[in-house]
Image 1: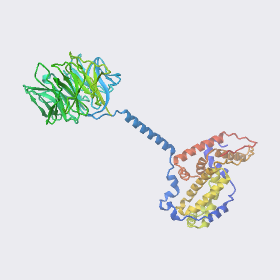
Image 2 (image 1 turned 120 degrees about the vertical axis):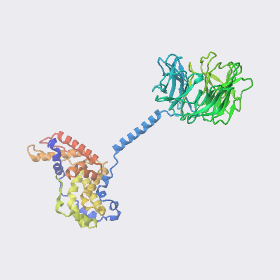
Image 3 (image 1 turned 90 degrees about the vertical axis):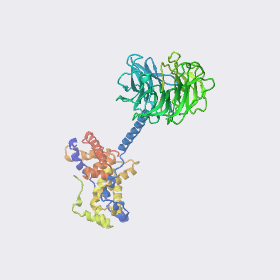
Image 4 (image 1 turned 180 degrees about the horizontal axis):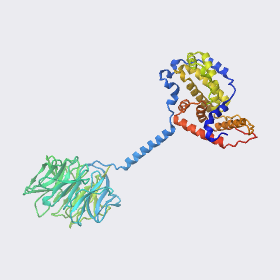
Length: 428
Length: 196
């Protein structure tokens, strides 16, 4: 037999040998049958109207569907679609920066570290730990990051602000110099900046730091600042209580972030103080605690002022109540929760949920919930509960409490914090 | 190359042009020029004389009927080859449910003669061809028997060029394996047929 090397060369002749046969005996049959067959008119052939090249190679030039390639392409397409779905699914949907959202995790401090807890089960996860003392986490409005203070010289020392992702990674220092009395820090609506207040009560400054750590700057507002907050929805303005000094009193102001230009919302008064400013999520109003100078008793009243300066209302109190303080807005901007007192000082206090339009005294919790000063209130993102981070009479944070805003019923939070807590917003 | 080319001195183009216009005598002349070739191609592809005969008849009937649609007479051969390939494959498909038996010819092979060697080679090649499916056989036959370039083979069979190449490669490998590994028994009868 022919060798393998010669096989290809010999194949034509071998085929010719195999194909050898007598002349076909059916030639006449072919002639006869074709003679009885009518030809199709030329005009009935599509080829007549097509380019010549299509005549004999039409079948070849219209490639048969390459099933293998199609299958591979289909698999790739499916993989791409699945991948896209997985990627999209793995990427956290973020909520709008304002308005009701779903409840995420609660961030809080315990033992100088930051944890987050499932608000239902209380199951906690360490977010930022280490030998440093970390304090007061605040979520970004989209719930993807946390800003907190890290003390550089013990729990009471100066601190720097850090931003971390919601899983604790990507830690970035956003202030370079340790500063005293960092307070009131909050993310801008777009998350690119964090405002913060620094300094003593008499000379508190308003600063803005880039969240990528690229720098910070002080806003020159010409007065001591308290309770600064971005005005929704753009954050182009920061609303704050300002003390111009010289006994002029404390007013409500807004500064344009781009130009440092300040406008007055509520004129300062020598007889009235303003503090605890909270801007409504819809950006239309600010609630704050107004007080008169009286060392013998608490004189706090919660007032709500339109941010265009057009109108101010004072939330009503029921008979026997002596003061209201520490307002916090519901996410839908319709309700306020406040602390309410029935004595001259911080005893027998309740929490009250009051309509922001001041049409009623609202509902109250049982008395005796909190006894002192900076009891912090925060609505859950879904507005179905209120988180209270209370201080006792000694100014020490006690067990946190969840309040039903509809009934005033309370229950202990299922986590154990030693500082103010913050609730993460997540997409609905 | 062993492909017949008896029509070298014949004005095939003229015949085609006349046949296109309904001249049956011209078409008969074309049949005479091409019948042996087509019959060989058909037998090589379908491996059954009766199927080959049916395929060839069908090819000529189609050719006569559709010839007016052929705009380029110079493409007549390529067109005819495409018709015969498809006709062969159609015939095989129609008869697929029927077992096709290849003629089995006992071969007496005196070992010392070239004639015996040729017969043995032919027999083994027939066996190797029989191992291929008709689609692969068509590629082998068009390329090696008719001497068509692979792009033309692909066009005639109606498959992509890459598929034609892979079919040819597979067919050659399979044939080499069949031919080179099959022992040749001299001095005795060799059953060289396989079921297609």
